[in-house]
Structure formats: C-alpha cells, structure tokens
Image 1: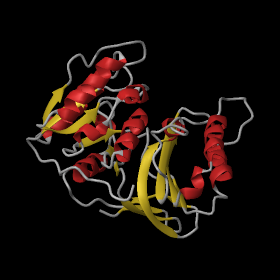
Image 2: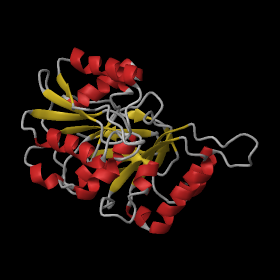
Image 3: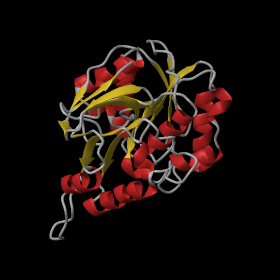
Length: 299
C-alpha cells in the first residue's frame, strides 16, 4: 500500500462508538473505568446495543457483531470506533465485509490483539487505524501511554520508542503492527496485506516458545518475509515454557527464527499485552534503527 489515508484528527466533543467485534466481554470494571478516561477527555462515547451479548466465547453471533461494526462505520456522525476487547472473532465477521462502501468518510479504528485482523483489513482498503489499548485495558496503562494514544488520535507528534537493537542499520518502511498469532492466521488469505516495503511490528501473549517457533517457521516457509524491510518486536507476555519441560526460551526462539534474515530488527519495545502498550499508527511511514534500538513514526 503506497498511500494510506489518515482519518481526520479527533477533537473533544466528537462522537465515538464502542463495539465488541471479537470475544465476549468479561472485564466489566476495567471497561467502565476506561470508558471514563475517554469521557474525561471530552468525547461523546456511545456503547453499542447489547454489547454484553454472548455466543460461547464470542461477543454475540457473527451477524450481531458485524452489525455493530457496520452501524459505527456507516454513521456519518461517528468519528472513531473503540474496540471493547480482543479474544477471538474479528476474522469471522470479515468473511462478508467490505470497507470500500465508506472509504470516503474514514474514521479511526482503535484496538489490538484480535483486532489485528480488522486493522490489517482496513489497511488493505487504504485507511490507517491505531494499534493500541482496547477499552478493557486502557485503565491499566501508564499516563504517558494514555497521552500517546490521544496524541496520535488528535494529531500531535509522538516520541520514538526505545528497545533493544540487534544491529543491521536503519530502514524506513510502512509500519504494520499486530499480534503474531492473528497475523499468522491471515497467511494465505485475501486479508494478508502486501508486505513489500513493510516494517512488521509483532507482539503476543500466552504462546509457549514452541508455538512461537512454529508460527515464525510458517512465515519463513511462506516466503513473504523476503519482502519485509524490518521487524519491530514488542512484548511476548507469558510466553514461557511450562515448568519441567525442556524448551528454548522465547528470546532464543526469536533470535534463531529471525536473526538470520539480514534485516534490521529491534526487540523489547514497549507495546503488547502487558502494560505499557504504546499506541502505534497503522500504515504510516516509520524508521527502524536496529543499531540504536529505536522505532520512530514519521508523520
């Protein structure tokens, strides 16, 4: 994707809609507390009807969750869509979905984890979103991370993120952040974006090292990593091996499966399932400095 549209900056008073496109809502206290953060910043936040619906592990049947997205996306007064939580389910509602029906009126989509599928699908349609805290996790973020989210959405500059550089110089490319597991399950589907010139930014949670190894091996065998300019690695939270089972560490797996790609890589960046989860803009130009360990968004 050569050009990605940034939705207009948000401003206090704007209407934002909360949807649950993935897993069933469980963290009710955190949900309400995070909602108050948005309201304290002056936004008119409306929660979708029947957001507490359940269909097994899903936040309601596919049609119900798809309708939440459609109502928010096609509402001319709505300027942003906040996802309630991740889990699983967003790919199911993308089986019968087309962003192109309303790309003339882009609005911000905010979320991470399972929301990766929605963000990458929206990127395919040429529109940027924000890989950042969902409504059940925002309350756990440090003040600087909350400020960073609102700075992105309201059009202000943000600071670079600092991690651990693996060496290999500096590259610029299109930033494509997401959850490794969700992204892996987009391989071989129409939802996988064109990765030419992309800087992938991956994070994950509760995946033991052998499963991270399996996913990265699938990426290697698919051949698509040959198109990627760099990789930024965030948190891999609770990805330790079970006790008393022989295993490589998650750090060893990442080094073995990515370290020979001859592209700049930075790890230990502060984004992912464990706080802090620094917001990242999808589909914008970024600079990855693998000598200094810096990821910088260039907007």
